[in-house]
Image 1 (cartoon, rainbow, N blue to C red):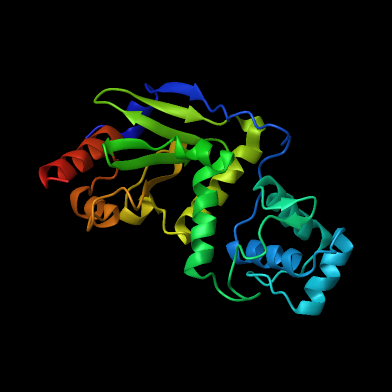
Image 2: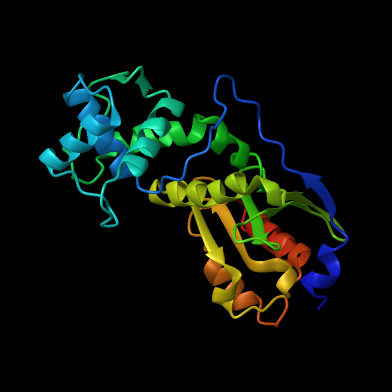
Length: 261
């Protein structure tokens, strides 16, 4: 079987171009925990007089608002949440757009209504939409993307099309690390909301050249056929040291089509 290293160098390279954002000079954020965003929003809904970060921090401490990873609240991490609320159009001049947007108490897990709110944001926010566009169809109703790191701490290469002998890779330039880092936010939100799933290919015992560091696959859960497990499929059908991506792509496509999905 050909190695991914031999084939991937033939792929066309396309520069990642995010959509222009009006009045949002800095439209990326590094927030991985949805409950924290919800809780800070709830504070603004409960205390409409919050007009600076110092007051917000004091109310956080008084209300016993907990972070999800045990970190101590600082002006910096609270400011990032506030800025994200503005970017997501949930705050307008420090006033919430809807006092009843979320219905779970502070420090409580997300309710189905809360999840629906975040899912809507996930599907429409411009920077998430940029990444939605990277997924390509295995069948008309099934989308996935392979991705890896190339000379970067963050994922910056996305295989967006695979043919028998060629393919296309969207690359995020090294100077745009804030975009590459946002992919981790994208996948974390997607997994928590049960919109996407992802697997590193090393789980299958597959090795690959350093060019494709941490090669992984992500796919839309609500687009894949019921009962289809990429993890089980690759584990049972691919056992060689190197995986040839066009072959994997077409095998999954044939697997789905053969079963009538």
